[in-house]
Image 1: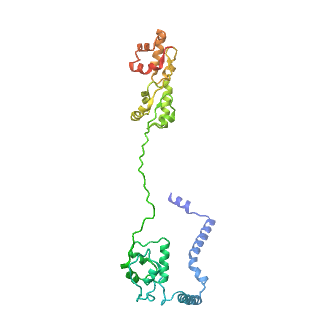
Image 2: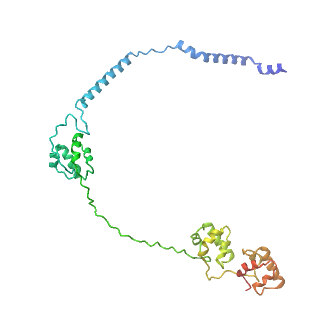
Image 3: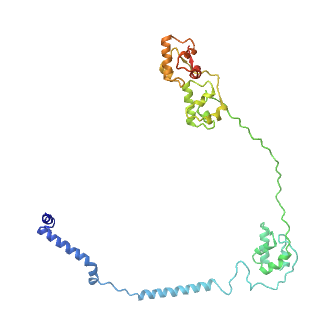
Length: 316
């Protein structure tokens, strides 16, 4: 059995053996090809001396350009401080006269007496004329051109007057506002539409539509408390809106118990099928009802059922 199985898988024809040898030869050739490639193709040697010379020349030119830019734009010996005057240019032997002054009201002559340079005086006057104000003696240190020693020399003599309020002070009259009293609107439950019910607290569009559908099935409300029987209306919500419900004098739709069918009677929310069927059967056996109260003779009609359904029934 094993011999037959092996012979079925490993017995080849002459053409198949030839193909297998050729395939093995190609696999060996392609496997050895990366190792034989350098023997047949020689890589070119690159002379990097020319490239290194060009890099060295570029570095020399870059250094020359940097040194030339520094010499042209920056003089280390004469570098000016753009925020404070140079120490070498400041005359430590100040010839100014010291006296008490207010930098907010001092004139050009006052600053000259203090020994301040004309250029710095022009900066101070320009600052004050544009609305600038010195609030404390140390504020003069912010003026460009005043040396720190010069500032410290003048600070003890600075007397700044309090700034006057140039804006007229407005007087406001105390006004009392009466809070408007919003009296809640009263709606007629027999004539109100969905928008009127939605205006009530806790009533959305779905509840408003349910109230109207319930009203249509009843034939109208005869007392506001019936709204609380609407399916899905929480009692807590009804208690909130109860005081805003009213009933108009419009009549409600009534059913004639002497002519109504079982289907007409059972369609009313207060009359179930068994009661509707009992009313029709009683009428067939005893004749027409002389008054609505006669339906009390039917055993299924309890006092509760009668009190709720009677306003919607008639014998005429």
